[in-house]
Every structure is written in structure tokens, then in C-alpha cells.
Image (cartoon, rainbow over all chains, first blue to last red):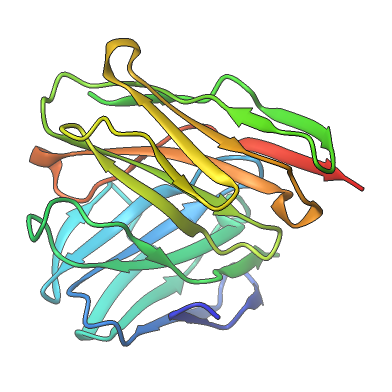
Length: 116
Length: 115
């Protein structure tokens, strides 16, 4: 079983809807990540939070809005998405470097998002 | 800038055959970390191994082994006596010390193990 839990596992939404993806970890990690993965492609980094503060935003459109309410939770708020935003959205967590060097990221199962 | 190349997009083998996945990386940093992840059809990326640039020892874990060669900038992965459960997409990834934990992924290699 994965130690990073993502909900929902599947989400279908219209372009005018507002929805949120949720991610939770209880490994004591203080870095959390959102990735987007299209079919047959590697994951693409979207956002990184370190100690609950946004540290990296990879020029993601504002229709994606991340939130880190506490050290265990990470949300991704979605609004007015486009069909090309359909993808697998992966959450990950890790220790914050440079604690022992760059530590492996632990991933959840992802949310499969379809935009109609 | 960093780059990871996995030249093999798909490999098909019969169960019990060995399979080697190639990974070539590019970076100008002297401190860097290499990773392998497995992604089964369920979607989760499963961490397999981390190597830092100062440790060139090869590693074996059960049926998995890794060959790190700085001279050729390669970090290859071998599955010995493959099993159907090894069918997945495997990603090689790189992070450099200066960029924190930002991973640069290779394109992935899909491994299909047939019974």
C-alpha cells in the first residue's frame, strides 16, 4: 500500500466546474509535490512546497491553484480547466534537502482527471 | 541544464529472461543523484534506488541490479529472471544538489514480460 494517499482516484469534470484534488502523507515529510503526467510521457513537475511554503511553481496556469494547509496535506484546486488538462495528477512527498542529500520522492497512486 | 535519456521505449521479453534498461544522463554539476522508479498500470511511481555521484558501487537487490558508470554517464538497470509482475514503465531520473529535489525524468522504458 502506498504511504501517500490521493483522492479521488478518478474525476470527470466540465470546463466550468470547480473541484479539488487532495493528497495526504504521514511520513513526516516536509516537502510535497504536484506532478502532471500525460499518457506515455514522464511526470512533469508543477509545484513544490517546502515547510508548507510554495518554493517552486513551474509556470503553471492559474486555473491550477495549490494549497498546503499543514505538513501532511496538499490540495490542488481546479477551475475552468481545458480538455488538454486531462491527465494523471500525481502527488509526492520527501524529506527536504539537503538532509542527507536529495531524498527519494514517494508517490501516490494519482488522480485520473478527465475534462469534458 | 540536466537531461536524462532512456533510448529504449519498449522492451518485450519472455518470463525468466534477463532485461537491461539503459539510462544516460547529462549534467555539469559534480553533486547529483540518480533514481530509478517503476510505474505499474495502477499509476503509482514506486521508488527503487537512489545513487549519489560520489558512490560508484554497483548494487544488487534481489533480482534487481544497477550499474553506475560515471565515465560513460550511465546508470543501467538489470532485471534478472524477469517475471510477469515486472511488467511496468521504468523511469530513470536525475536531481542535482543545487536544484534541491527537482527531478528530471527520462522518457521511460515500457517493459512487457510475457508468460
